[in-house]
Image (cartoon, rainbow, N blue to C red; front, side, top):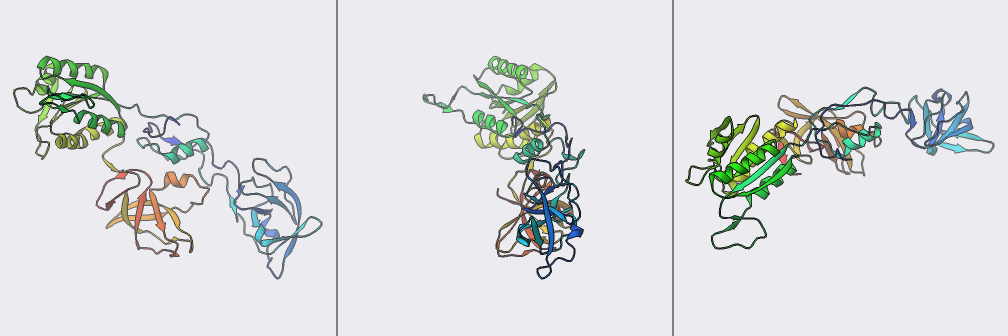
Length: 394
C-alpha cells in the first residue's frame, strides 16, 4: 500500500499466472462440450450431475462421459470439463439429472489459466506512476513489495526582508510569502519530498548559508527571489561561491519569468526563481518539475490521468444497448493521429485490462457500438506524453 502514488523503479513482472487455474465465468454446469452437441430447446440432452465445484475449493471428481458438475462463477473447473452451460439454459430433473437445451463450444464461459496475466509477462515498465489498479494487479500476483524510485528531496528557500510566513501579523511594508508554499506544494504533488528551507534575510551571508544548508540536506534547491540584478539580489553570487559550475543560465526569453537562473553546485540542480508570484509559479512548472521528473525517471511532462484525448477507433468497439459501456482501449500513434484499439480480453474479471489499457471509451446506452474509423474521446487511465490530440479536462 505504501507504493501507491510512487514511481516504479523496476519493471513489474508476473511471477505467476492470473488466474492460476481455469475457472467458470458463469454460474451453471461444467460439462464436456462434446456431450452437448446437438442440444436445443426442442431437443434437450440429459446429463447426470456427479459433483459440485465451489469457489475456493478444487473439485476432486472428474467429469466423465454423459456427466456434469454444478459450478459457481469463479470456481475452479473440474478435470474433464471444458465448458460451462449457464443455469438459464438448463432444466433440472429428479434423480440427479439435468437437461441441457443449448450446445456448448469448448472454452465457452470458461476463464483460462493465465487469461488475465501470463507467468513471466512484464505488465508495467519502470518510470510509471503506481496507480490504484497497478497496486491491485501486484496484489493479485501475490507480491508483498514493489521497488520504487526514491523521492528526490527538493529544498525551497525564499529571500526577502519584506516576507513573513503565512499566519504572522504584517507590519507596514511586509507581505506574506506565497512563492515558497506554492513551490513546496508543486514539488510534493509531483512526487518529490518537499523540504522547507524557510526565509532568508537580504544579505549575502544569510542567503549563502541557507542555500548551503539546503544543498547538504537535499538533491536540488529552489530559491525564490533575489535572482535579478538589483543591489539586494544575492542568490546568483551565493550559488557561484558554493561550487562549480554555478549559475549557467541567468535570464530566459519568456514573460513572465525572464530573470530565472538555472545552475548547479556539483551534481545538484539549483533554480533561482523570480520574486513575482506568477513568474515564480510558471518557472516552477517549466524548470523545476521537469528536473524532478527526470530525477524520478518518469520522463517529460505528460497529460494527467483523467485527461481527454481524441482518437479514431482502430476497429469496431461493441457496446451493450441499454447499458453504458466502458471499453478499455490502447492508444496507438498512427499517421494522421491517434488510434484507439480495443483490448481483446477485457471482461469484468480481467484486472490487467486497466494496467495494459491507455484509456476508456465510454459508449452511451443508446449506441450499439463504435464503428471503425469513428472519432472517439478517450479518458486516460494513466499519464501520457502530451500531443496535439489533447482535449484537456480530467
